[in-house]
Image 1: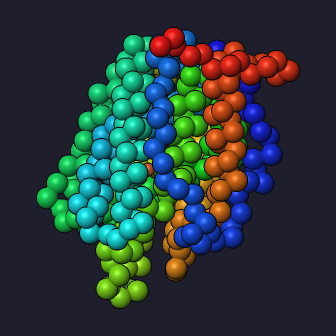
Image 2: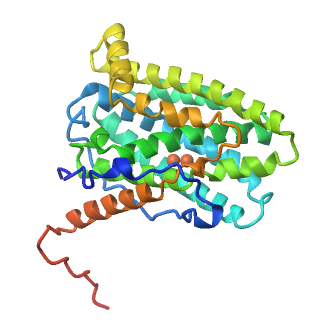
Image 3: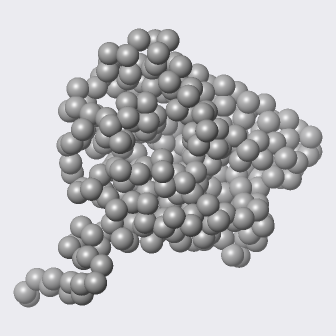
Length: 314
Ligand SMILES: [Fe+2]
Ligand SMILES: [Fe+2]
């Protein structure tokens, strides 16, 4: 089904830089979402644009293993942090498990469309293997930094509907749902890390998180760029053309990479916390867009009555 997205065009005003105190932060809740099973109706499912499509495909290809790593990094801390953070960690794990599961389904659709995602899978496995045998705090630090990436990209998708405009409802719903949950749990790994390093000196904490963020950024930039170039190679696009257009698509005017540069740099501010940026209205917008898509699927059209829920006879 063709989406009526963007549903709300006033999203750019939906983020503020007023810090949100813990009591006012949104609850972290795993939604019971299952993607509608679908084959890709088009190989270039983002506006028939191979470069925009390659960005999302390259991310999806690495989500299952990447998010499994993050789950494993958080599990040892579940029993070490107090409530209510413990409950948030459990909800984080549940949310990421759902994302991993649904992106496995999307990746099957990519394979069905003729893509070989094994080279991208090998890259993320190699990244994860670097942390085999590392201490819990090192794995947690890496996860906390990766979570900054997923949160700022997710917020950008919710903020600027043009990135997913013209996308079929089934795919749009998957990405909006994932984006909403990433923004919702953006502070969880950071809060666990703060708890885990509470006895450290401020310079030691700052150094560790800054060095890790630079390393994770380098790895993310190189590997996701190479991932996109590999998928484009499978589309028949040569290396230099692919590289040039991936950079233009990501870092040209309005590109996702360009738009997240400032939120990315926020991480290096002394005293930074993910909820220094108030994304609550952005979350509400994402939820409203998801509800609209679900209503459309149920047959609701503007001006018609919302269909009564069907009940099975006892
Ligand atoms: Fe996720
Ligand atoms: Fe996440």
